[in-house]
Length: 334
Image (tube, rainbow, N blue to C red; front, side, top):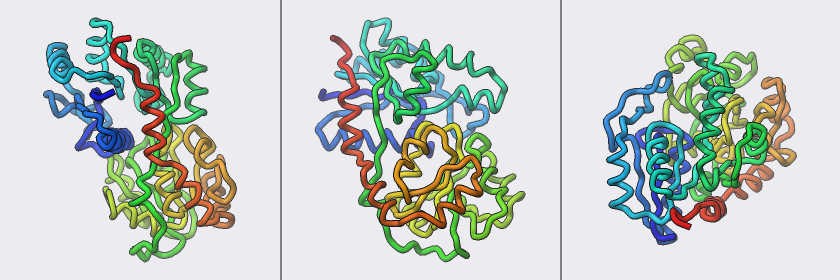
C-alpha cells in the first residue's frame, strides 16, 4: 500500500483519544513511506454537535467526497467515525463498489442513552448496519470485541493502541501538590464518570487535566480539586510524572489511551472493572480494578510497584499497533 485515505469526523482542533490515535498512526505511516490524506470536518461547513460543542458536524456533499477520493487515488480507504463524513464516504465506497475498513472508537449508544435516553438497541442497529459494509472493523481490545460480537458485529480485527515512549517515561514531575496526587486526564464531561472521582472523601490532591462542558460547574462544586485545563506533549508528561495514582472513572471508553501513558510514566491505575481497564490492567502491582472507586485507589496506593508499571506500559508500542492496522486494511479493489 502506497496511498492511504482516512475519513473522520474527529480531527484537529479537537483534543481526544481518536484524534491523538490517528495523528500518531499517520506519522507512523509516513515513516514507512505511505502517503496519506485525511477527509476531516475543517474541509466543510458545519455546526456544533449537541453536548459536544467542540466537535463540529460537517455538512458533506457526495460530490466533495468523490472529488477528494478521485484526486488522491488511494490504495486503501478507512472510515474512522460514523458521523456525516464517515457516512458520506461509506456511501461513496458502496456506490463505486470500493472495499473499505472501519474502526469502532466510541460507545455512542451508551452516550446517547445517558444524555437523551435513546434506547441503545436503536443506536446499535445503525452502527451494526454502518460497520457491516466494511471488509474489516478494527477494535482495540478483546473485551470490546466480545461485546460487539454479542451485538452481532462481524469482520472484527484487533488494533491496539500505543505510547510515545520517548515522551511518556518515568521522571520526577515538577508539580508539588499535597500527597498523594490523584490524577485524571481526559474530557471533563458527564459521560466520563469524573464526578464519581471528585466526590470521593479521600486524602490527597485531586488533579484534573482536560476541558469540557462540565468543567465550570465541577470547578465550582469541588473547589479543593485542581483543574489544570488541557496539557499536551511535555507538559502532559510532567503532570503524569507528578502523580501517585491515575484514576480512570469512565465506564464507557473503548480503550483509554491515557492509562497506558500513565503506566509508561510509572503511575499505577485505579479504575472500574469494565471494557478498557480490564484489558490493560492485567498484571499485579500496576493498579487495582474495583466496583468501589475509593477502594480501588486505596488498594492501588498500598500495593502498586512503579517498576512494574513502567515495564507494562512500555509493551504498548505504536510500531506494533501500526503493524496490526496494516494487516487489517484492505485494497479498495480486490
